[in-house]
Image 1 (cartoon, rainbow, N blue to C red):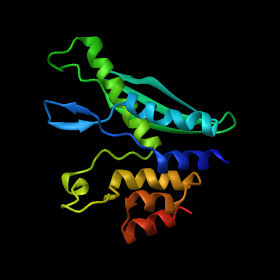
Image 2 (cartoon, rainbow, N blue to C red; image 1 turned 60 degrees about the vertical axis):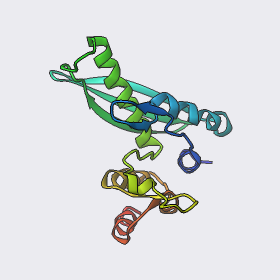
Image 3 (cartoon, rainbow, N blue to C red; image 1 turned 90 degrees about the horizontal axis):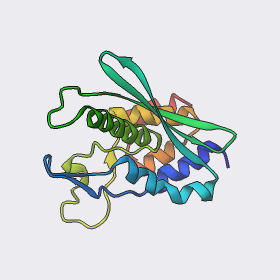
Image 4 (cartoon, rainbow, N blue to C red; image 1 turned 45 degrees about the vertical axis):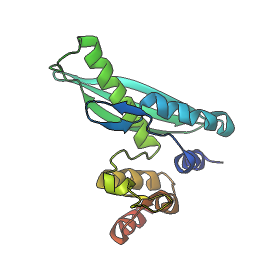
Length: 177
């Protein structure tokens, strides 16, 4: 099994509920730790490792580049997220400000790698009284990630199994092949 096939398996079978609650914004979310915990069953089964690294790419203003990587020892696939550090964040000490940016970057780098889209709106999750699951629409950001995934050998069908894909989006993805 290639690294692309292994990543595809994780992307299509990944399950991590939004079990943390933000009382200020009144919404549920998942953290980087939740994402990593949900990937652990796949690591031994598929013979892969997942690592996350951070680098400063700017000091004024402070900006972090976070890279999530999956590797099978022969090949690897990386995904990046860029986050700024809010130096004016009220109620936080400086280490907490950097820690918050770091956590945010890890979550989004992992989300990019595993095609986790946290941009669902209430209509995407509302079943309108019907039982069953609802696929979320593929956003512009998701389309960019999907095209990168396909360029690295991923399958359009994998994307279509997880997201509602418009004809225009599918055409753009096919042009990558």
